[in-house]
Image (cartoon, rainbow over all chains, first blue to last red; front, side):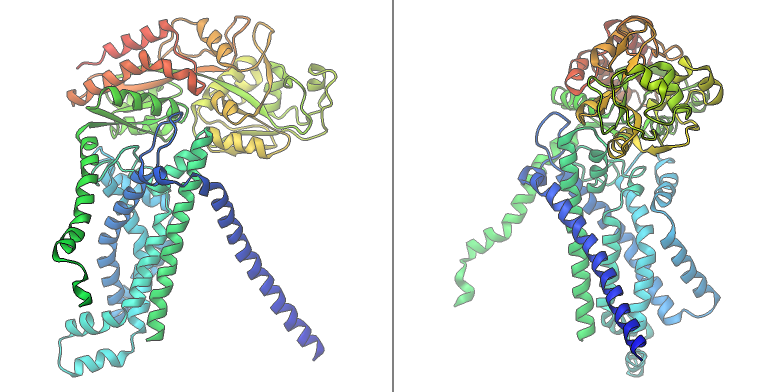
Length: 276
Length: 352
């Protein structure tokens, strides 16, 4: 009896401690990045384009815009495919074909992002002999797909069956029941999946090396080589120069902030679903 | 009423202002887009120099911008062969096999000159830097000398208190021109190294206690964090990161640090370099730093897009001549004049 209580207490304390350590490490990383990066964040850093080494100032505005365009385009590609696949799996997904899709989506989420970058390179860069932001979007879309598919399936599946059946009973078509009744009901869950997928790729660097290529210039045309914030952090971090290291920290801080905000938004989206 | 707080005109201007901001920002962006953008990829060693040189070039010639990305020498050659870039850059010229894979005649142009320094991390520093003989350096990287207080090192550094600490060899984990230059030197000074390991962009490191780092920065970082570590890093990284350098014995028996001057001296001993005869490691001459090398740009001799090729040609010609004046501020050695001539002759072979 005593022993049982003791073991239970130890378990609570132990797991609590581990949770504390995990959260503590995260806070430590955050604090460190803020300490190293915050001093370099200023107006010209946020609005300027990179200067070469030895020329003071310069910023990552082209990288921020480039990241936004690449991720935006990736979303345009991945969202319809992912959501429709999720709908299919949730509403009609029985049998070996659906199981195969689920299995493949899980496998896809485990493939290293650099391999997907190389795939995009082989398909979209090498044949055209031209690096482009769009090829990076393709790589990102592939990375986003499994997340959108699986969260989409869960969100759609989470809508009670009777809601759909009720809609059908009122005589509307299956298409309308899905698109105008089930999908709106699952919107919060779908949104969460999308935001998490966006957060997942925002910090990715590896697939960009051989697709977006990077750029020191303003570039709004996704068929050209494009800058990206994560890529700029990478290049600056491996350089030998102190002011570039500073900017790398500042860029990392912006990336963490972006991912943090996306996660908070995802949380809010989820909360509004559960409270409904 | 509250709703009419704004007059109609105010509301109009409020709704117009985002459009105005957009138009203004486009005004800044469009001139930048009007220029032709050339792309290049390769050597991380060249990157800081290229980035500054091309920046100045674009200020003088607004019609062209150069987007250079440092993906490593091996990657640069690969992209050049795949024709995804206008030029590649590599710290060791393309070899026969790579030239064959390029499928068309290639022009190789020396663009930068640099040195590889030996850097280490020891708790008790020897004033003036620890001394390492050529043989001792080779033996350390062969894994035959494993402790810092080895008699072989102690003999070279009388009076120094060397710790009883294992030596940890730090090397590049990626395909690297720096590794090529360094192993080229070791093959020159040690027959055992030449037979067992050889020269290359990536090799099998024989030392037991060895770790890899990605890029020059990776090696520099590993050495700084690991007590007892020794590694080889491009000079700019050692200077910028204020790392401890070892003195090395050159082929004339003189003890030297890797400096801009000693690298320059090594280059001066070999006025004629070419893509097939490029090595300047272990040159004779009392002031020659023995681990020095050129970096090369690679271009196609008969390019299909003549307009782009002309722009690339002009950028490169400026880079190997006037652009060299930028080199010194960035811890690079300017190309010797005769090598600038070699570079210009190579560029003249391109059919425009």
